[in-house]
Length: 276
Image 1 (cartoon, rainbow, N blue to C red):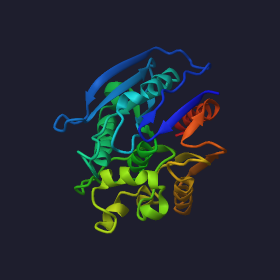
Image 2: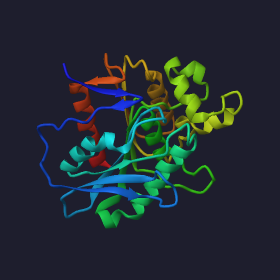
Image 3: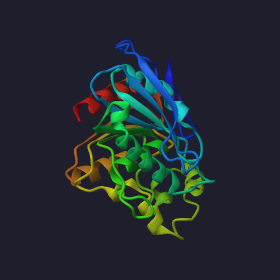
Image 4: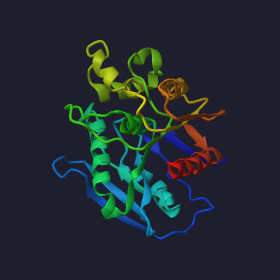
C-alpha cells in the first residue's frame, strides 16, 4: 500500500491524479510578501486561464519548528492543473521566532495576496487556506484571527481546509498528546501557567464568530500526533456559531494517510474551493 505521510516534521508530496486537466502552470518563486521581514516569502503556481482563478494558500506543517514552503510544491502544481491558483507560504519558525510570529506571517501573506490579486489573476473573494497539523493550525488562524499581534486589523481567507489541525491549546497537558509538548514549548516559550491568556489567544477555537468563513475539516480516527477531538471540538464550535462546516473523520487513518484517503481530501478540497 502507498501512504501519503503527514508528520509534524514532514509532509509528502501530493500525487498527480489521473483526472488532471493538464493546464499549463506558471510558477513564480521567491515572492516577498514583506520585504522588511526576512523569511516572509511565497511561491505562486498559476493556471493558464483568462478568468480570475480561485486561490489556495498552502501552509506546511512541522510543529512550528521545521519544514518549508517547498514541501507543498507538488500539491500547488496539482491544484493549478485543476484551474486553481496556489501559493506556498513560508513563515518564520520557532524557537528562533516563537509565537506569534508564524501567525502574523500567514496573516500578512493573505493581505499581500489579496492586494495583488489582479496582478496574478486570481479572485480576491475566493481565497482558501489549507494546511496540515501545525500548518492546519495556521490555516485556521488565517480564517479566524481578525487582528495581528499588535492589534492592527488583518484580512481573512474566504474558506479553510483544516487537516489534522491543532485547534485548542488552552489546556495542553489535558488536550494534547505528550508528543506535542516539545513543539508547543518551543512555539509558545512561556508555559500555560505563566501566560494562560497567550495560550487562549493562540487557540483558533477562541476566535470563532458568526462571521467566520466555511470550513472543511479532515482528521484521522487513529491520529497519534494530534487528537481527533481537536477537530471535533472545532467543528462543534463552528456549528454553534452558525458557521458552515463539514467534518470528516477518516476511519483507521492516523497522522499518515493512505493514498486513497489523501486522494479524497484533495478532490473534496477542489470541490470546496469551487463552491465559494
